[in-house]
Amino acid sequence: MGYEMCTRSRCALYTAKENALPSETTPFGCHLTIDAGTCTRFDYVMHSVTAVDNMQTEVNSVTDAILNENLEVYEMVAAIEADVIVTNDALKSMDQMRNEMSAQEIEKIEKDGDLVIDAVEEAGRLALAANQDGRKVYKGSRNLARLAAKARKANRDAEVAEKRLKSEETRAEKDGTECTTCPGLRDDVERLKSESKNAVIAAGQVAKQAREDSRNARDNRNKIKELRSQSDERRGKVVEAVEEVKRRVGRR
Image (tube, rainbow, N blue to C red):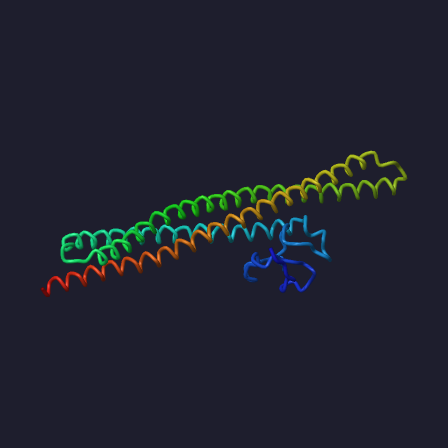
């Protein structure tokens, strides 16, 4: 995966080239995600709620796109199925004229017909794979939402504990007494910050997997699109060839 300087924030934050979203849909001034490279200036941001917010924005956008694209996948498969029906009807018409056709002519038409059948079989397999990848992306987005909520809550609780710690330290210093609650509060702050950081790291892994699953789904969609084009072409050749035979036989 290649990285380039983030052109929106004009800073040292790096972003994966293929992960960049349109600027109007990306808040927080950058494309930072936990797995998008090393920040040379604002390293602390990598494990912050800003990072998890960016990841959630990205994955939600990817999820919406994949779910909508999968609808198009099934529309293309249905179109190939329709090509099969038209091709089958044309081949049945050809069967009635076999005695008027050469073996080479029959073989060529049937070969094109077989390619249409093969296309729908392969498209069905790819559509199932695309659907499975789409479900993975969706489940990833829901898992990411839970991790993001966990990170935000731990971060808020850490901020509250930190404010209380500072207040207790200030009061103890003012009174000239030992702060008996401070050690426990420090432990709470450290624990909550660690909990938030770990949730962000886990969210980063989920976002990375969602990206991979979405790429797989799109790859399969593009393959189905190519099969749809091939099916349309072969169906047209079969129909045209059979119609030509009909015209030829009719002229005799």
